[in-house]
Image 1 (spheres, rainbow, N blue to C red):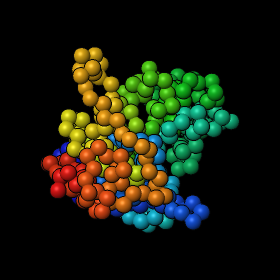
Image 2 (image 1 turned 90 degrees about the vertical axis):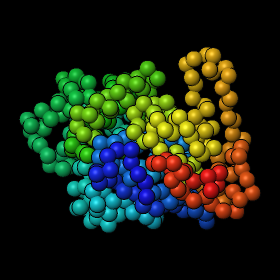
Image 3 (image 1 turned 180 degrees about the vertical axis):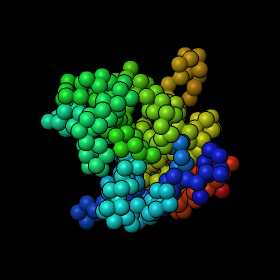
Image 4 (image 1 turned 45 degrees about the vertical axis):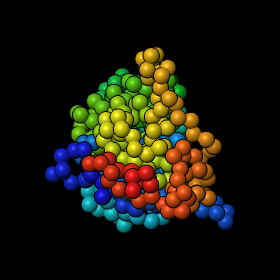
Length: 325
């Protein structure tokens, strides 16, 4: 269904088809991820953007089967992740890893950095003794940390250094695919670019494929080949990074992009900022028809009655909006 900006002779590494993840909350159902379909091709970075609570992180965790999907398929290298036995899933986990959002909460404060990075090596039986130590030191060096600090504890490192430790842990099992779940949102702005540049370098060096989840649109543009925009559990637009930023089709994407500051004060003064009215509706009780209609500046009668169809409006540029029907 989706088409990549990358060469078409490649098979997708990851195929997500009609993925849904619902949570029960008392008598209600929270539709956190509601019908996602997209591909990710080897060596590319797909950026996932949207406001907090739109389902980006839940989608990432469901893809890795940290949560079991309510419905839909996740195919990794052609194999359905949802149908794997525990043993097969453990094997596949070597190829799929995650870098978590909070470098303070995702590292065990009672473990040394060497043991944190060494844990996945131990779980998968990849190295022991001196070889294990060498591997940990190599990984620390790879992410720009001093290999001699492997016996220190996480509290002895800054936030940016801790996130590098998290990256080293994800790389320990030599994965093909990494989900970066808002890996820079908890860091100082000065450190964010360093971590993103490190991820880009590692991608080129090791041929990695990323799903990069964030709400900082300028940083997503910097790292992503394609960008998907999410709203209330659904994908509303998907296109090549340059194309999406130059010509957004969905009113929600337009509003998000209008919020990015432009360094030129002349352009910034003349530019019109699109202010969205109201709050994001609850995923327990999403609006009928188009999920964005309650806040959309271009809303029409049809929007409340019929859910817009997900379709290719321009070559390799998809959206779900009644404006293009």
